[in-house]
Image (cartoon, rainbow, N blue to C red; front, side, top):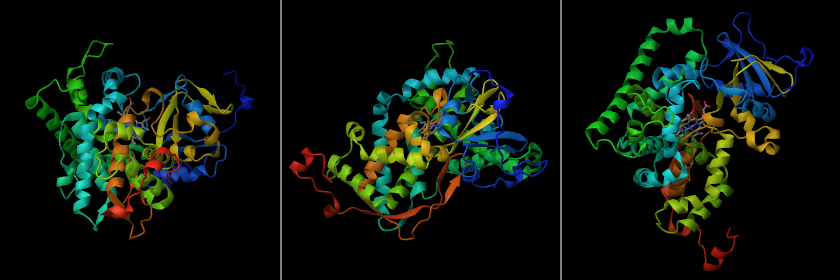
Length: 464
Ligand code: MNH
């Protein structure tokens, strides 16, 4: 960057605030990111600043500004002063919430990366399929009754990461209620978010909430302890899943293994990060398909072509799909399950040639406004960030996409959906977002509803 004269600098504009209290009083206690997204419409320059709980924050979504913020020589993933600083109360220095400078991040990243290669996905596939078939089984038993789509996708994704990662069975489809772990997690996430938006003084005054928060954290840790204990007692070590790797592997760079407490925090992190977002993705995808019957018809046609009759999908078939992955990508564009990520400049810097950011300033990248910005169409590399950026981007991307492709393919092979209550999107934000109260009726597809492909059709592209 060339030297900047003071004259080139322009102030970052702000919505009107309250003297002394900044913008804190106007932040809604539910769905704050939705609110930040609405405010973006008032600032065509693609960024604005706000003071929340005494912290200056800058929100950016213009693709050119975002491209600068994604330059890892200038910006890093910010934990301090973000909700993640509070998520560390239970996720510690595990992958998601570790500071870039903490040794724990690099160690876990190096040890776990091989477990997330596309090749590794082939190894998890059988277990992914087993859980997806449990979902199908439940919906077959519920034929004609309303099912809570989001809750069932949550059962699916939680059971999948627990089984593939840790050999642990939640058996969520056998139970009427969601596992208590999920409620504890939801409440803890909401509390973390709330703490990041209020002055510490306010947090201290909410004694009962604090007690509840600690109890929720304890419940989650107890579960993780039992997952680890089961491994030590049962199958023993030597499994080549995530837990096996974390217990056994030494980091090539430091020559050390992961500490016990760190393994505990990683297991909890994977149970959280490995299910929340993918269930949101599947829920938003199903919602979007209900609203786009032509796309739904294309998805059915793809499934009927690749999985005729009762064909059980194998890994290669899932990888050959085209329409379903595009539906998932588009869903991630319009409904990114993690709607905002935090970055900070390593040194004082200037973005867009005129907006000054101080070292360590908190910069929030707004996914929704970024993904729908008119410039997004001709700025591809940095205009689509549903999995975050750089070394701190999602490690579980292939895992999520493999699991989601399979689940969507299987439910479309088997079911038709009906929306008798005309569901209106009601986003619920915790750290991730999901549709709230999303119910549909499901019923088995009949033979005549399946797309019929003749031998000729199979050889041409225009089978629709
Ligand atoms: Mn995931 C980081 C989105 C599925 C495990 N994930 C991130 C980030 C985003 C993200 C965005 C970066 C956050 C930040 O910068 O603060 N993740 C997703 C989405 C899906 C998803 C949209 C599904 C769709 N993630 C998964 C799955 C797993 C997983 C599945 C595990 C099996 N994600 C992680 C971990 C990190 C992460 C671990 C932290 C990586 C790191 O910082 O090194």
